[in-house]
Length: 82
Length: 243
Image 1 (cartoon, rainbow over the protein chains, first blue to last red):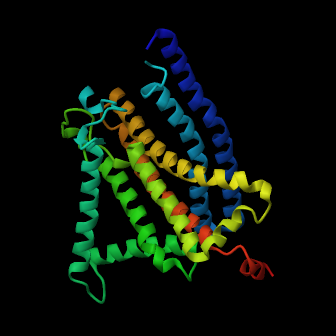
Image 2 (cartoon, chains in turn blue, red; image 1 turned 90 degrees about the horizontal axis):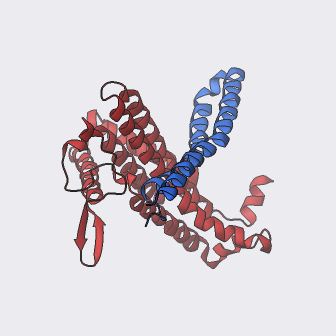
Image 3 (tube, chains in turn blue, cyan; image 1 turned 135 degrees about the vertical axis):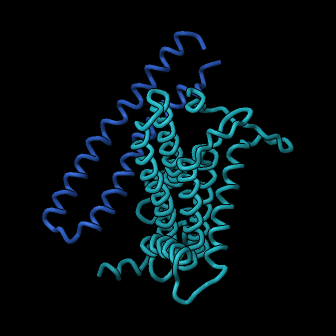
């Protein structure tokens, strides 16, 4: 891999994970705050709220993971490396 | 210590079978996982008691858990036929994720690549996701015949491309989500071990156990919900429900 490609790939990988974590971070914060509000309003529903919260958090996390997959491809299986 | 934390992504222990190159480390661990599940089921059912205790109790709890996943998504009427499929997915993914973290595979030397959870190879997760795709198509077609395809145009013909696209993004997101999560956990632990070999990676590994359990749950839940969605009738029944 020539140096320009590797430099560009490293920066692109860092940006992929960094940018991909902004949106899900905001989303998870929103979801968690709403869940806390829900539990405070109705403590007996805590179990159900926690289950739903975990499931939806994992969905949001998947978006960051897509960025991570792109970063991993750039670092370990770079299609432009040849 | 660095040998314990070799971050080997994209290196595989190749086996040549006919014209195919297969990833040997994935096959090895997959068969171990299958063996663990099979032996656990055999032990639990070898001496079945009316009042379960010990291991039988645990396995019955596991069965009820996967039944619960199927029942929540597919519905009371139909879930029994689909419990084996959903349960198999959940148990296989769950056991392979956990074995990947709990068993010190790094102690076993391979010529190339390293043993790890089978789900940290994209081929495994894509295969599982494609199985889910084929299954929900089959569920829809066997239940509603060719009427299954009416869902593509029933809302509006202009939405047809989106519905078709969804059939492709479903397996894509299923497989990437599982693969990315498991690989990310292993990479994070690997990097931490590289920096501080003792104690410090433990909380991360605990988080990995939690996250990989959740991922198995999500995979099974989504598979069940796709199947339930494919079988549900978009015709009159739904309107009656709302009325």
